[in-house]
Image (cartoon, rainbow, N blue to C red; front, top):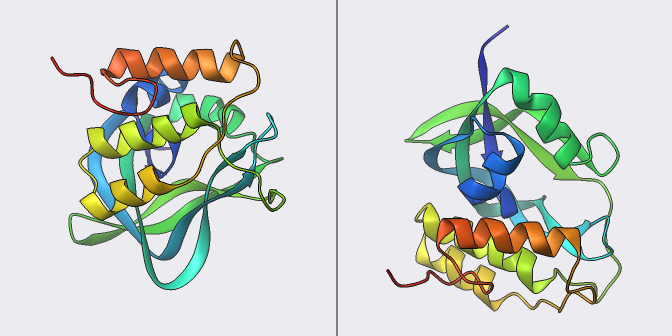
Length: 181
């Protein structure tokens, strides 16, 4: 069994500090792409908001970040992604990294939100900050920034508190904007 595995992050886990809170060994290798897929905020989260997932979309490409993670931390990532209940784990998911196709691990949502359900602002901020941090293409960042979100009705929620800590640790504010040095 290998000592590490490759993980394709496309939502809030693109922010290295967020992912390292779950998997301390996570190391960003850089941007990767999944042909035939599109990012969508259509996954029903445990907090009743929308979360990111990938949906099949011919002719589109989903951008994300490829991480290397210790194999001993796979169970922690499974728990964070609520596998197998909310997401299905794909261990042979094809992505292009540095011009080469690689089979990696990612998670695809299984629970669709109802119309009108949006991600919380803090969740979108994590996605935006991760896209900025990993230098995803400008059009990907613009699309994330333009996606409508809603305010978390519980300002003291565990999800929001952890998100704000990860954003601050990475040098971003609660909107996902880089804080000037």
